[in-house]
Length: 252
Image (cartoon, helix red, strand yellow):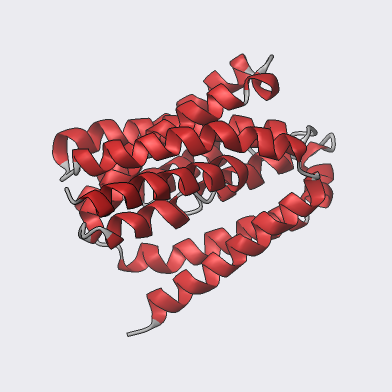
């Protein structure tokens, strides 16, 4: 691999790890970086899933403070994410993406709206119900896991939106749990891709090295950033990504 491509992958990994651990937008940087060094779309997608495993490790290491006491919750939610990630990987290797590409921008835009309206939606979700059961958080995580295993761009935003709505806790805690749970989805997909898909291992290793560095730094920045401005920035970035993906999917 060319030296400039290697440097670009490490730099892209650092940026991806930062944005992933802070905003759930890791693939917004890592996937285009892989395309920029010459990988075809399918190879870039599966290599991206493998490289982003390091982001979950780095985020967990940098978020030890926020993750205290969250072990049981993480195990329960990671199981749903892992099953979803495996299903998404199988789906990617056996279907075309035309319809899914139109659904993705809508999901991302919906996640952005949930983040912007988090407090109202959280009050509704956590309100005691006498006639109706509380909507199942596990099902939402499973579905996001499928999306994460299939493509993954802004899967972290979707996961963060669901967790922010369902729990009364600081954004930094939701963000930390999101990173670890989403890592389970990536892990399931990456294992399958390693066996059945064209992973570019050198690119995955270089991207992963950068992701490890960036994701380790990201949680400390989240810890020092005012919550409301950070949430608004994440939502606006997600809306911009949704608009771009919608234009890309609907333009002949």
